[in-house]
Amino acid sequence: MQACIVARYAGQVLRFELVSGRVLRLGSAPDNDLYVPFPGISRRHAQIERTERGALIRDLGSKNLLVVDGAAVTSAELPLNATIRVGRATLSLEEARTSDLQIALEVAETAASLLSEETGTEHDSSTGGPAAALQLVRNYEGMSHRAFLRTLSVRLNEAREVLSAQTMAIGTWAEDGKIAIRSIAGSLPDEEVLKRIVPGRRRRQTTRRQSANVVESVHGRRWCMAIFGPDQCPAQWQLDFIEYLACKSFGPESEPAAAGASTEARLPVPDSMVIGSSARMRAAMDQLRATAESDLDVLLTGETGTGKELFARLVHTAGRNAAGPFVAINCAAIPSELLEAELFGVHGRVATGVDPRPGRFAQAERGSLFLDEIGELPDRLQAKLLRVLQEREILPLGAVNPRPIHLRVIAASNRNLLQLSRDGAFRPDLYYRLSTLRFDLPALRDRREDIPGLTLAFANEAAARHHKNVRGISRSALAALIDYDWPGNIRELRNQVQRAMLICEPNGLLDASHFELNPPPNSPPRAPDAVVAQSPPPQPLAPLQLQVELLERGAISQALAQCNGNRSAAARLLGITRNGLALKVRRLGLS
Image 1 (cartoon, rainbow, N blue to C red):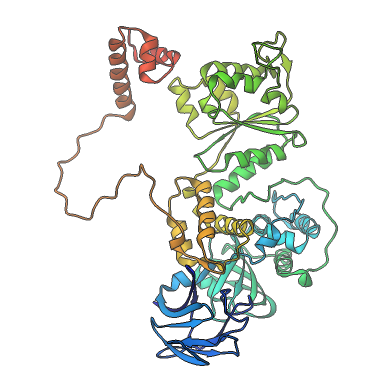
Image 2: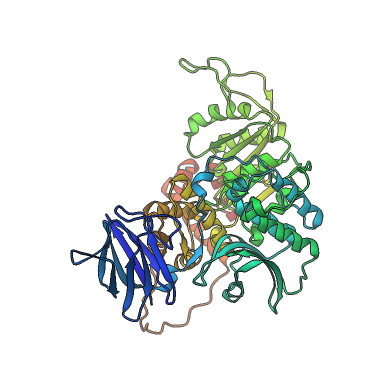
């Protein structure tokens, strides 16, 4: 356990680590070691140091002094669990877990001021090598220091790919020896690697270890680190590029001169999108980069919350139709009887009170149409959509002649469309037509190495949105976030960080208590640790396909018998289409 100073006022609680051998200054000004912006506290109110009995507090000439038992004093001993009044707040010395006090990820203090500044840049990390690095340098020279900081996680991910590094990280070194990571691309560095960073004058050094080669660029108490594999020996251009990134990150006074802006085409990653550095996300980006000039329709699959719409926008902006509109529609959110008119439009007055209007296909002309939840599309509209994709023309309601269209269709689903097509719930021909160019977006639990970078990006975004400064995210909180399975994926992580930022005290530290990491409602309860009677050995299992066929055969036979052979009624009872039932009857050999 570690001793900490706890400041309380009107339900707000701030905790600060108290380190032996250091004298800390407390006050309401942001440059204090213990920044406590509570009423009645002077800008530089008192200083605190650790003693054998607890802590010694000395007043620094404040207006309200220190108050112990109703009496104003200029110094006082603060034993463990005792309290003292400072202004209108109370201070106490308490115990806390070290991992709850030490910062693992540092939230940028300038996040709130960066919200309104637009960068207007495009990003690309398509290939490695010195030419690609020079491209990035030219691009970054068109950005201000503030704009560069706003998208620091994106920049580090670009740099990591260009350098072919395992990890890129930027952070700070505090006087008490604690290291905080401000932004990261790749997996979290080992503790042993971080401990080797020593503050001091500006320098660059390369450390060769058995497990990795580490390049550090140190600027006082700020550092930039690149970690390469043990068989990678960084070239001079890589060392120079790392130094440039450090200078660009740490302020305009450190930036070296560079050439003008690049004119080469780039892969435009939105500022709000954090790609991550996991193998599966890199594979998806490589696939997108290789097919960027294609006009093929696209299918995006992945669990709910994996960022399918954001990725669809990236597909749009990277393609030939980037100058055209991006139109999105959720097929599950609109009643089936209205969806046809919404998609294909209405020509003329087909009914009383129904006015002519263009559909989403017409609105997306020369652009991209994003069909979310395509698996919920009714059978009749699946057939019509298939014809549209094949013939590239639409027939609005009430129209006689079809209208040609020129656009790209991007469909998405969180369901297994291949299995639905096998079960008769989705047209196989439509599935194979859509899946010519398919991207599978991984669940967050399958890319845990991206959680630190995503968390930091969301924390900076939340700090800017809510105009709140926090010191960072504790080691215990980050460990809990990485260990959690995230059934809601990136959307759940983002919402958790937003909530944590709202309930965290100003200048506080996000710890594990700020996050509600509960198992999903449908997850099975964990078995108690108890002695269980030994069960008999399991019987040999039949092949899975045979078990499935036996279950289907029994269910279909029972439904047909219950409906007196009426296949339409039996299909409704089973929750599948009549065509799907007919396919199963033929496959199973039922009469």
